[in-house]
Image (tube, rainbow, N blue to C red; front, side, top):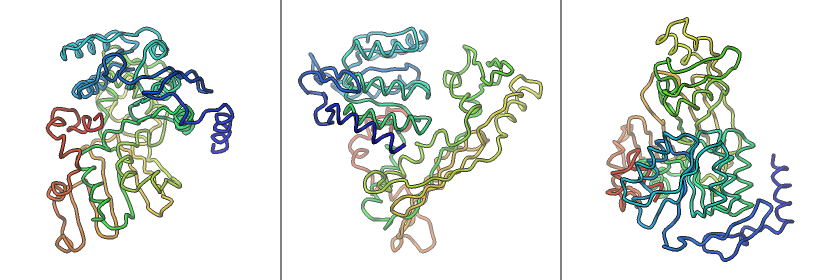
Length: 407
């Protein structure tokens, strides 16, 4: 894969594409590159406001709209979706802010390309089903959008990860994987403590996505059609919007399919891609039992979905080794009855933070062999962004971290 990447970049270089020479926000003129035509971008054209576009208009899009319009100087130019219902709902939502209605692109699965080619944006935010994240991100970058935000998980395969890296480097477009947990207040306070040396040299991290999603994936089990031999679940129109696409990932895939809520904050604490990197990974999964049991418990052994073969193991454990010596354990657990947890643990030579139980221990400052309540430590080491914007964040989703991320 590295050779493929080098070959790609050599071709890019030969074509005269240097990141410094590409059209970016505020640059004059248009540049044509191997990645496609780079349209002229003048930030805040005409009225000086930053121009946003949205691809995918479900509930997550509306949460992002709240934060985009809460920050002065932004406007929404266009939105795109293949379903009329979410479009109508999003237009009603935007109208509450007493701002002009955006242009609407709808219809076929590739309609987002028409939006990208016909409009000029400073930022495009992608909140679509997982399998569309990479095609839409790549299209936006190639269309010359200076800043592209894509929801997690950003990619589903190693090849897709390289697609995002290669196109971003070739076009000069900034791609932001919108991992909101990186901006969670406790995670940023812990990061502040790490950078101030409270935990000493960092040795180990723990994290994951441990969230009972059985009802999200199935509703009550009655809104699905299963065609024997097809391998796919066909979701009816009354199914939860997320279930219309998310559940099939549990049918076809086995692995940690949603890692970034956990690994994002830990990666920051370990300076990943800032002098450190992930070196190797080993993963294993338990048997798959939870989703089948949920169907049988709620719909009986004769329910059509009882015949579906779910590949996703109930608990997936990944072990990562970093080039600077640290280790990380990442857990994925979405098919089991359990309370929500991201299981954070950041441990160094002088102490550690453990999210479950709200624990902090700092050698020489905590009572020997006794946990401190993390709340008191986090008040002292609250990140400056939260200290400055807590009032605005209080109105935002996911405990305010969505606002801090968008800001």
